[in-house]
Length: 74
Image (cartoon, rainbow, N blue to C red; front, side, top):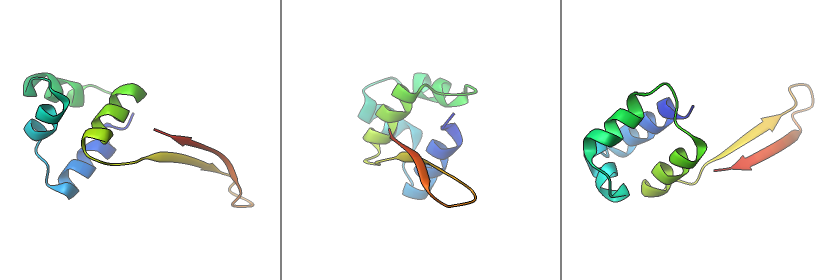
């Protein structure tokens, strides 16, 4: 989960993987391996987004009413 979003954000910000790895204080190959997996844990996504200075949340809404049912902040 979140891998496509993280890659899209890095592309929009024009931030290379190596730079994000440096901010996370991990080797670039390890960060690349993380993004090549099928999913990342919520905790990993939170750390990566924090390194990118991004605040993220997930909002679940009722389709019929448009009412927010639940909001989760990463």
